[in-house]
Image 1 (cartoon, rainbow, N blue to C red):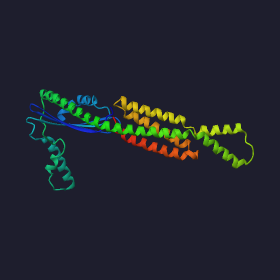
Image 2 (image 1 turned 135 degrees about the vertical axis):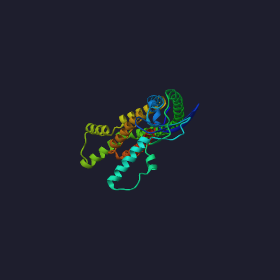
Image 3 (image 1 turned 90 degrees about the vertical axis):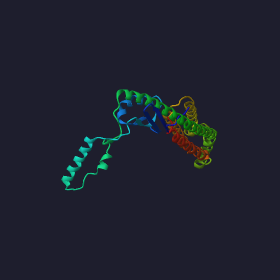
Image 4 (image 1 turned 180 degrees about the horizontal axis):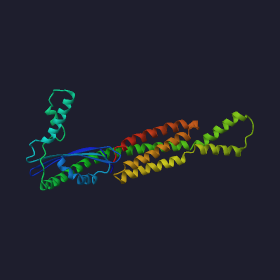
Length: 297
């Protein structure tokens, strides 16, 4: 099953005097990039919380926000030593500049670390918080993955439809390619008539030149590789939930084959234009799939 990298979930758990809100937001990223936003008192728990996230998410930029409400924690606290230090710095600068304005205490209270509603938690309280927090985070991640699975199903359907379109284009170009030897011979014979007029041309030599032209325009190998890549892409979608990077590589290979189809048939004007049109449509479908793959884990 394909899983999207984007999603959001929020869980609230209460236990005794503890109330925890845990929100998890995930967006696209090449690797797993975790960011935690939670009270300083809970910082020692971050390593174990990272382990929980890694057990649920493989790739993406993930933001985990934790808000803790505990009994008796409503009272705001002022770190007076930090506040006094900021006021002293303000007054020192005023003296240097000759300013008479008083420091704005309201603005100073907005400085991180000056004002807090956090109480110190005992070891027993921390253990209780850890239990609730880990349960809340696990629940939020499970909800997140349910959302990501649902979006991933929609992405998978769109990609499979586009792979079907690429296979249809491959078959169409393959039919055109069967006519390349005929057109190559006609083109060479017409060119020789223009240059040599009625002069006899050795049939064996003509066959050699036709074979050379056909070999230059032969796209059978590219079409075979293209089909193989399409089969691999479908297998990845069916067998593994972590397919984003592998699919991106296959799409690069598909795009390379489409470019070769364009270049190798350009000197066969009878079919080169139509092959080129269909190869460009291939490239367009590949690019649309790549846009979808950027959102797959």
